[in-house]
Image (tube, rainbow, N blue to C red; front, side, top):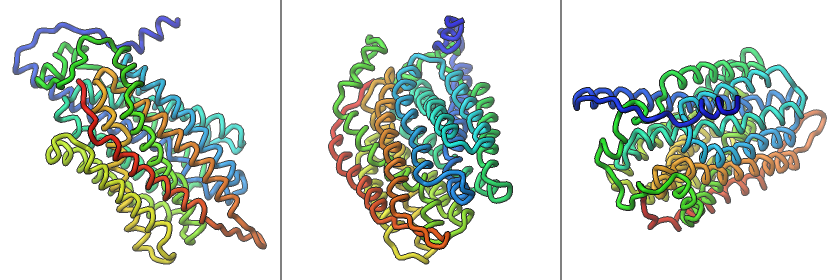
Length: 447
């Protein structure tokens, strides 16, 4: 039984199918688009199954089922299991059938969301949301490995940038679509709707995401595009190049920089709606709509990031990453410290935030590490950055939850909040991320 499961998830065997040049080109183009579209849409639905909790936090608190500290601990359960899973599943993805691996993760994440719509127990939320973190970690690594297997070094930034728009697509679906459903039918349907979306995405990934060119009887992407890096790891095993990732100081610096960025990112994505409702008096739908603007500008940021870094900066990500980091600091400052009562400024800050985070997710969150590492260890590089990133996100949710709860005061059943310390925690993390990213300016690329 165990052997059958292992064989099911093992990398597909190489098929030697002779094809002429015309058929080879046509087949390669068709399969590349199939992989790219299914990976992008599939990962966006992973995000829907991850952000569903963010939309229903205030309604759950208002209903008296859970409090702010409990929600912080529940949120952190996902981030911590996700962090460990990003590393573990990143290493596994390099050796796995990514089609089956990714589809399984989305299917199980969808089931968790469906289950959460039927409970109000704190421990049930912690356990199920923790399991969801592990299943969520089965999404990014297979997606990135698929890009490494199907797209060459010189074009990877462009396609990675567009694929990274899946983060923002998922946010838009959640903060607009799921929030609208919640406003009509109640918080339970936030989980039900996310679960149904996840099930449909799992089916699509299983049908249209292909494992590797070699499994379809095609040459490797490096041979097909004649695009080999200066430093080759062709004769090294997957295990050997994965060990090199663990020894690379540049990837470790990127990991910590990304962790700081993720604290600032998830401060807004996890608590932004709550902040706008509690601090500025918006309704749940109004607050969700303002935060959702960041999803639209995030799509622009991710797409522009990859194309510009490839075409303008010759696949260097440093300058765009620095500009985006500074823009992230500015946007959070405006969101948190500009006087209340200005919808236009809250919206503008989210436009800038989404654009900046879209670029930073693309670069700090993966692409810069993948550029440094060998393609054979793309999953490992992403996993190392991922465990640091989501450890930071998990700590953020716990710290933020307690800071927000500590600043809460209730008089005659009316609650008010003092977000001062939480705000400086969120902004300071963004500043530290920018500083650390400067230390990887001269890192080298491998094949």
